[in-house]
Length: 109
Image (tube, rainbow, N blue to C red):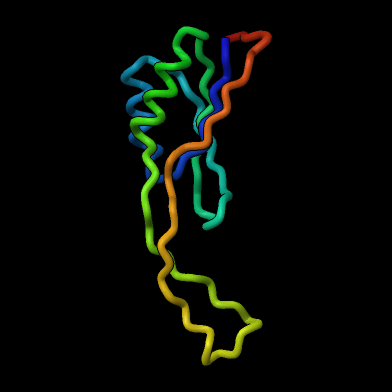
């Protein structure tokens, strides 16, 4: 058995959750925050049999695609106000960071 931990952007959370349910894969969703934009993320914890790991990874890959997004640059207080104009910057967001860990023991009560 393996534990798949997938950290994805909140925007992809509902779609991934629906696809996992359709594939009869149980998952626990946890809200999380982090990354360059300090944006909301969702962390999925998925306990799965070894033979289904590739299937789960494919579901995550298909539904959590990376994309480009424009964000306003933060204004710094160290810069004079005439230079402190926020301007849009294109950044790479989305996708998934996935860890696959071995599970020594699993119990359901």
